[in-house]
Length: 592
View 1 (cartoon, rainbow, N blue to C red):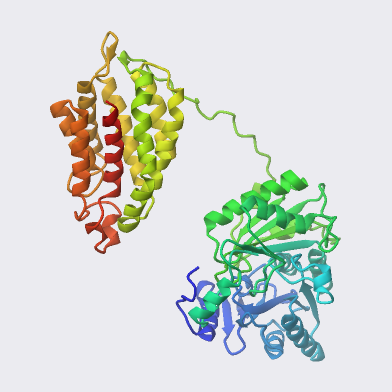
View 2 (cartoon, rainbow, N blue to C red):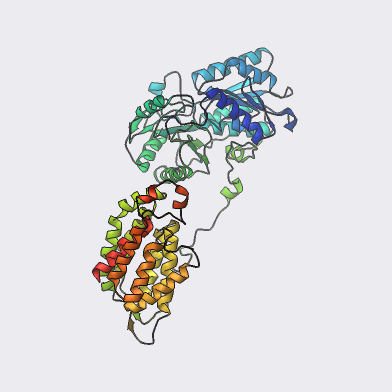
């Protein structure tokens, strides 16, 4: 999170613009700007007499709940300013004027926060006084605040509210009456547990940078807060832990029946469940995926729970918060005369931009064959050759060179942070560490058998552009060595190496236009091969590689990410790829 940095500094304008945007991304919606109501265009309703479902609350939780207005979910949403409940008059205006008059009732869903309960409650009572048939469901699913601390207030409303909205919206869409809609909504609340965690506080647009820093400092570096609310409310504890430890603590608070303060819902091993992984808004999709995997694994391992559905994404956000909420719903019996289950209602189709596009229920319920133990041969058969390399000599030559490259990671990374994206050093280090680990297993005297192990190791452990170039080059080198095979056992001489290396540089030219002078690893590789072929002296070749790498300092890039970085940093540092390769080649030459 970049403290205090926002594209919009006026929070009122941000809220109104965001609400207006929904009518642009979903043309079936309308917005009542003065009352901050997003609602479905009456002409878009195929069944206007069905129960209308309304939800709302403070802004800043997008896509909840304005993004859920649409077929199968909400008829309307009433929004407040950022993290503040809408007023009772806004709610009344929605219930009285923004819903189809022929509707057979209105279900209002509110989260259990004092302002929301009071203002939606007043709006509901005003509508009832005018003759409207209205029911209200209050959602409290948080376990972060236990019974002792929560007192009469009860549990806070968290992302489980999205599941209540989904299920009640599906009921209304199917023509179920108001009484059953409200009853099943309360059933869902009573079978929900949720808990959040965050690495930092969120920052509200319009607040100053100093305020943002103070909000971050409240938590402190290296800490994660368990039980943090969706409005920057403090949680139940601050801990230093890794992801598995964090998830273990969270699931314990949610599911451990011995914790009398937090055991709100009894969920046992034989219960069917739905898992909702909600992003506060500032967690990357990459990390949210990893968190989801960890939660799913521990649910099955420690609690015997294998969710029937897993929904992951940002449903009930908290601006730019670097946190997430875990919600577990026990699939209780709905008792509906239609026979519809909670799972059926979760699977029911929707047409709203805020609900994540999920795989179908049919996909979930289908039985799949287990993955085959082997999808391909563990090791492709390598045709033997008479080219001989002593594995002991290979280890003695490569080991110090690889260790030198690993030790240079910080320096290569520093250079790449100036002229690239900072990943070159780590990529080289990963590849070097993998090959170093492989060395003790090299036992064959056949050069091709050795390459058959080294090449895939590099390919699997080095990614990005450098990984692709090295893999192409090494595969080509193996092919060009094989082309020099002989009828009788022959040691791989410097001449054979030099010929194969020169041929491989030509092959590499089919995939990259890079040449010496372009500020790439070719500035080290090409002079090494040229001098080795000309002199047969590896030390002189390594010196030429180092000289070529040094010359890249101040050289303007013609290829690679350095072209786009800009600035004058290239004048101060060599090309990181060329520099790293020269370190490796110098290490090899030193042992020969």
